[in-house]
Length: 373
Image 1 (cartoon, rainbow, N blue to C red):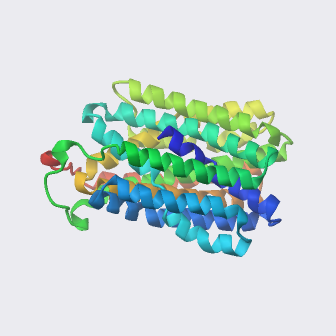
Image 2: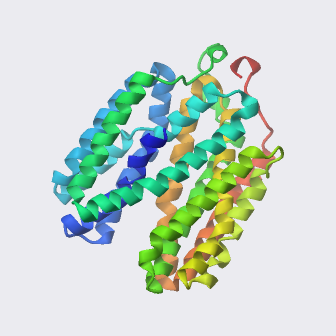
Image 3: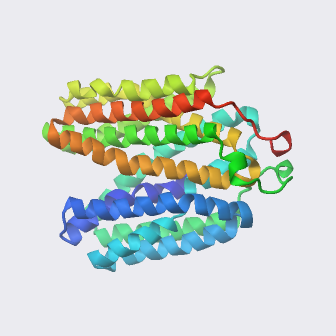
């Protein structure tokens, strides 16, 4: 799953470089393609999860893999208008790698060890973000945008073939009991609250990335962007290690407060670049633990028969957070200074997550039935 995530993490930046450099369009035009792809994936993730619940992994991976490979191989040869037109349906047919990884871990790992497993999965995600964009930018700048996008398509096709052949389990054997419950029977208020928290987490994270890039550009240190993002990813991975190892981890409210509040003053340490990297370490320590905790709660609250759809809804919530958080932070930066991007990311994420936490507190905890555990 680490290998499958690497080309996916390179898609955003390589597509942006292709639109700006090869097609001669602006960053706004590139953002439109990215937004259409993100919205498509937000729509398609729960649908793909529901189909996996019903038909199994192989047919869905085969369909999504063929569609994704075809899109990324064809993308560098399409005019801009055609690229915008196919971005939304291509996003809907994106390979749901995150959902598949979490379903497989839930099936392979006993409940008492899932926190550690999900923490390792979050660390894997951070590792893919350190590798994928770097390789994508190197191919796009040193070879060509066509080579980078074609490489993404071929890699996705091959990795989906491996997934089809490996066919990891998505349920434990004793989870096959029972019919699919109705939507109102499992989409509880508490689960909706967790989805809202997931939305807030990614709102904060993508806003932080936008503010970081803006700060480095404003201080003439944009060439150190990779180093700062790598430091952020390493801090998140270390936080995931500690979260998965300790016996009594921090609660979800505590993690959300650390994640959102600690990023607000980061703009006060905008230069030199290494001071900004240090200032961003505390908030990123809480990144992987917060993400893994939300996944763990979704697995606890969703019956086995609908786990794929529930994971798809979590993917949709996080992708919508990505789609909204960046523009909000960008608007704050345009109207003020890069430091206000960190404030907007932190306060916005805190408000959204606080609403989710308040909703979570008012809802009773409904565990899934013992036969489905």
